Amino acid sequence: MNERHRYIRIEQPGPPEVMTLAEGARPQPAPGEVLIKAIAAGINRPDVLQRKGVYPPPPGASPILGLEVAGTIAAIGSGVTEWRIGDPVCALTPGGGYAEYCVTPAAHCLPVPAGLSMTEAATLPETAFTVWGNLFRRGRLAAGETVLVHGGTSGIGSTAIQFAKAFGAQVFATANGAEKCTACVALGADAAIDYGRQDFVVEVQRLTAGRGVDAVLDIVGGDYTARNLAALGTDGRLLLVGFQRGPAATIDLTAIMRKQIVVTGSMLRPQTHDEKAALARELRERVWPLIERGLIRLPIAARFPLAQATDAHRLMESSQHIGKIVLTM
Image 1 (spheres, rainbow, N blue to C red):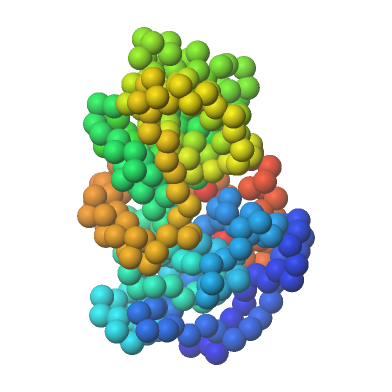
Image 2: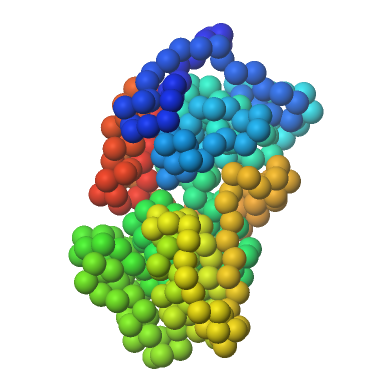
């Protein structure tokens, strides 16, 4: 095993061009951690925010971008018993994914689902942990309920559509343009709403015969917040996982009180080791069998070699992609 490895370095926050390919000492796993020889790494919106300097890594985490990888176990820290060297895994990482080697807590690793390539497996952890934790844990989405998923062709959106359908919910999704709306339906959405020319509140009320949806999974924030409340029905749940239109919103609190709406949300990265480990166990038990049966398969929009991380981020920021973007090592 090489003592050095290549990784993507950021010397100062800024546009995609601040990312450069560098070489440095290979990381070492601490107690309870594993070292993964990465084959692929998923790209997510939080990576873009970190590159811009507005989403710093938690204390002690690698400053290298990258929150999910797939590869093989290359070394094991003391106290780790559930994995062996050579095991194929995909993993949620606290950082460090844009690299040939990455360390992460052993409890945040999952086996590569049977039938998936390493590249496909690298698209799973960040969005799977986020969607499961919010839509099912906090949102308590149940079979027979209705959910509105914003940004249906994003990584979060495409994951949420498939998870919700696999567990028996009726799914409506928003997207921009006919092509993306068609893609949402192909992913399993019962209806897709083109937010560029349709009012999603009006469409949701039409699709639910005026009842409103049981849950909204929102990556948009900002002025969508009040409209999300209008789209929800009685006992609805608004689940906030992003704020592409800003973190501030003005809402009428009587809408929450009148409909008995629960407003919640989370960021994945700041959660504790034990919270993430619990999510990993639940995903392995409840979701991984569905993936292995072919009921869930995330689309990959593009693959880039590690050295072209700049191009990958440009695509992410263009919002022209459908599905996940992956770096390959």
